[in-house]
Length: 67
Image 1 (spheres, rainbow, N blue to C red):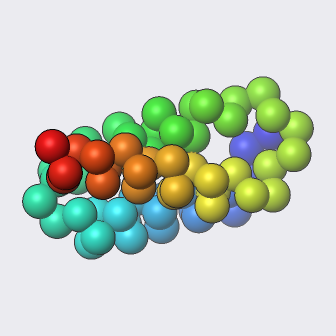
Image 2: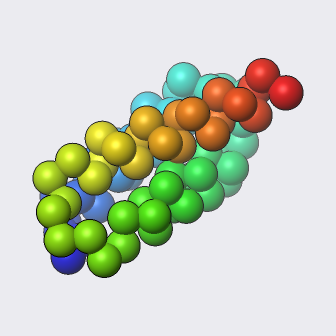
């Protein structure tokens, strides 16, 4: 179950990734984070989801910048 704390941490991840990848629009960053976050839907253990989401989204955004 997603918690308010998880949602807050996901929002911070969007902000951090937007700063890290300024050449990518905020909508694309938000979509990458949302896609990564959806990957963990249904998982019971949520402790590290925000960290994993930020890493997954960051990898996707990094590949966009490289191409």
